Image (cartoon, rainbow, N blue to C red; front, top):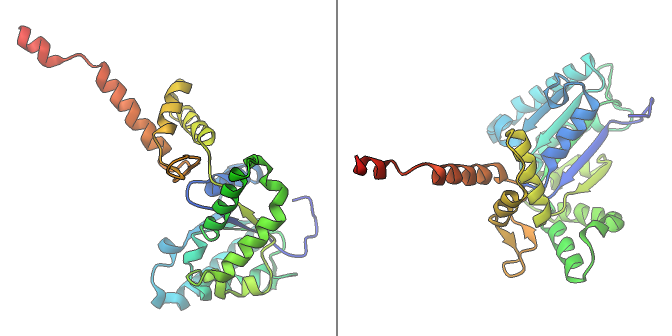
Length: 264
């Protein structure tokens, strides 16, 4: 954002298992770049299964994608494009993006150097989990993994090439090294899930209750099965689980109406 003359658009690729914060961090970025955050008219989100569901319509999708990106950047050079479920996108569609991501990209008179592209993917999630588990087994703190960030980024890159099911594998974006940073999202520990529950209490405008948050967090599934170190679903379903506890507590607090009916 401080480079007045970038030579290419900023391209970030977020990797990690479900519920580890990829969408959450994307919202934080949008909030700090645009006044209205993710609700800004300059933030555009595409989900593979929703926007490009039929493989037989790739030509139509490709044309639409080109039109959407070109049109939005021509109106506002600092537009942001978020692509969720990148591993489920067809390589032909991913290749459609190449013209906009390249160095000194200029398509039909429009420069894309100030645009931001963020890819969200579960690809390499297992590799990231394995690294986190290895750190734990060696008695190292999870927070120190950043010191091995270059090594982890290399492992993510290698895993993309080994994932035969990922559209990334066959994409020219990978071949031409157009992704600037591969960002690993680590599996969450109990303390992180607890923080998520506390945050949901704020969003729901109820009093923060640490004990309740701890109870809800501990009721979420963790792995390995015996040690229970990392959350299986991250913070996914934290709100729903909290609602269940609140409803159960409210129900338990209700008077036994049948009892009073019998007394009458």
